Amino acid sequence: MNKINPTLKETFNIAYQHYKKQEYETAKSFCNKILNVDPNHFDSNFLLSSISAIMGDFEKSKIFLTKAIELRPNNVNAYNNLGNVELKLKNFNKAKSAYEKAISIMPDHVNAHSNLGILYFNLKNFNESIKYFEKAIEINPDHGVAYYNLGNIYAELKKYGEAISSFQKAAEINPNDTSALNNLGLTFRATDDFLNAVECYKKVIKIKADHAGAHHNLAMAYKEMGEFDKAIDSHNNGIKYEPNNMTHYFYLSDLKEDVINKNLQNKIEKEISKKNTNLRNVAYGNFLLARYHKKEKDYKKEINYLLKGHKAFFNLKKVKFDLGVKYVLKDIIEISESINTTNINVKSDYELKPIFIVGVPRCGSTVIEKVIASGPNPIPMSEESAILENFVNKKILEKKSINLGGVDKLQKELYDLYRQKGVVSKTSNYTFTDKSLNNFFYIGIIKDIFPQAKIINCKRDFLSSMVSILQRNLTELAWAHSIENIFEYFDNYLKTIKSFKELYPGDIYDLQFEDFINNPEIESKKLMNECGLTWDKKCLEFYKRKNLVSKTASNIQIRKAIYKDSADKYLPYKKLLNDYGKNYSWFN
Image 1 (cartoon, rainbow, N blue to C red):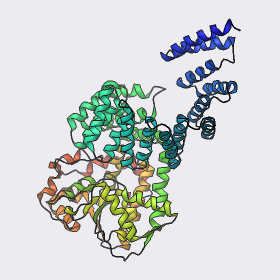
Image 2: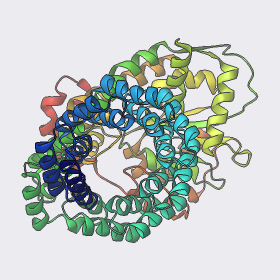
Image 3: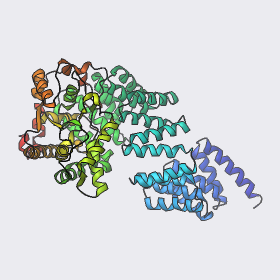
Image 4: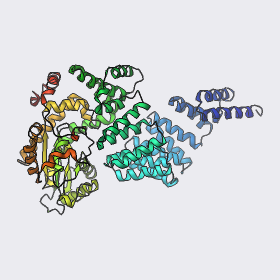
């Protein structure tokens, strides 16, 4: 034994040196030589478990870790790593047990606490997740990973202030943490702080020039700011470093139509035919092929490729989207029909005068919002903030009741939320827009809480809106990736609006977008009068505003003057959708 052990030790040191150089196959070979001599060599079993995990073979990693724990039952790192492997295999209870065992052996094992936080994040148990990340930080105040993950939780919860602080702390601890800086940029963008978002992405690129994700995010920020040339340059940089990523081509084609050509078609078909192509590439590849066939006026092929693309994109986010579809096609209707408040007639100290713009996506609402907000006394805009919807859902969960409580308290809480959003201002007479389109489900609550609110129901030819939804990839709307779900959502919208019009006759202002673009001055004057705002020509010159930003699919259109756009261009699609719409009288 005395002759063997030094040899094994030397052999393992060689294996470990190869491991550090990322020469995993060579390291593995030396470890296996050791195990042929001594199957109970702990370090070799442990290192092989790490190599197997790196190479994606988590079942084999688990076997080596189980052996390592058998050899050293109190090795805390073996239990922590076993938890990581079980987490990768989605064996959440086993992962939890392994992490807890590590903590029972060493209560201050910072990584085990942090990993439990990650586990609970995956289970969407954010309260428990926060608890374990905070414990990790208590043990090690410089634990940048814990701050980074806290930032992700707060961003998911739309607690953007806390998210920004957490990401900033992670970046302060590790100034080269590109993930923290990139996500900080995303969070700034979520709060419409585009300048800080751009700076974050630039920092990422300075650290890692080939960070294609940062180039993409920078392009999207520039696009939302209306700086299209810079956006094009950034998209091209993304393509430079990820030439086979179809996402870059898709968003570049929004700004440069000539990207869609025969060469790209051939590239896409080759890429998405590969066995190992990921769902994102399949989705965006099919979306691009649809655009190619649209240019060729082959609308049947366009629709077929759109359906393939949406199917792939839905499957990419299937767990989240399955819940989203159930919520928006069933749960939200039950909530809308049932929620109520108390003390409706109480006098408010919060004289908010919000203008709620409701409707379905691609109905012209972005243009309408810009018109309303661009008069002689510009008013703040809250574009797709979902403040009211998130507030209602949070209240229902807190109270475990469909009665949200007293109007006076609700008014104060919503006042604070809109103020934090930056849209409550005395100079604008406490008037602002909220263009969260599905607020039509909450018109009853709006009438209770905001007696001075205006409700603008933005309407457009249904076929035009539906085809436009299909042609865009509305990434956050679960229902927008299936024609069947699109029809059902539109039907629910029409039924809901009809019901509220009967309850509140004269309180919902219908704006037909086709009438608006054909007679913009006449229709905009009527609209501004309805909103209690002064009209002048600035309303129709919104595209000249230097502070014009938008994160919607209409971002490019709003940079131009209002122009007539015939609904007839969508007629070729009518027969292609007839089978889906045959059960809906409003479509036929």
